Length: 125
Length: 210
Image (cartoon, rainbow over all chains, first blue to last red; front, side):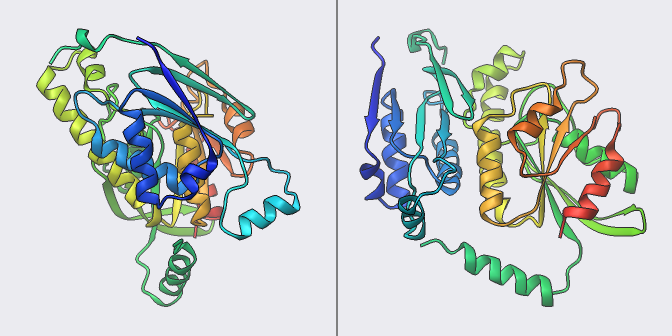
């Protein structure tokens, strides 16, 4: 099986409400895609995503692996302005279904993702 | 719309003018970090009664466990606490993991379902605690998304955080990793199992909680 990785522009999430943002992410994850967003999710988005993930867990979907790199701590005028306007000036988020993503190892400035495909047909009911 | 400032203001008014029966201390962390072992230690020390059952199998605590009016004395201070032992927060729960630990399939599926509800409950409580003890297993990499999400949510709400570097009794324990990962918060190194250094936690609660 091929593993699909989607690199998604920050504009895609910016235009969505919190609920639609979470649904957008989970719908893609449940299609066995690994998502890389060009921004970090806020802490509130992360907890909402975990909450919604828990609601959708069943025999076929066992959850997600997620890691975020927050934006640089060095604040320029641009970053400050974006933050004042309620935006998020950068960062990176990687999310994948836990059945594909075996482990995500995070260091302060780097994310390593280890994916492994397990055939779902071997899963007992 | 972000209504966190309004909630903070309401909480401030409530704290200032309401009759506070004790500070709500929430024990947060991933599964198997030792939250219930620590809650039991605190409860046994000051009330003589345990709070919950402990297990090697993750997600033993699947509902918030409460112990009210626990009076802790440290130095010349006395603090009345309502202890809230939260279910472990996780991003995935696979019933097959419980099966591989020897559980029957139906029991494993039931445990997984209850565990998902427990995670949701723990997240909902994030905005209702006065102080959080974030319990981490000091033998493991602290840089996990669960730890980062819990701390990020508490920071955004302005809730005081004390990080507990637990399992100091295990040889592989590396509490310095936790201090490096979260230098912005006080870290107490202890063993909830043996009770070693737990007095330092009481001192930290007296100093940092509100």
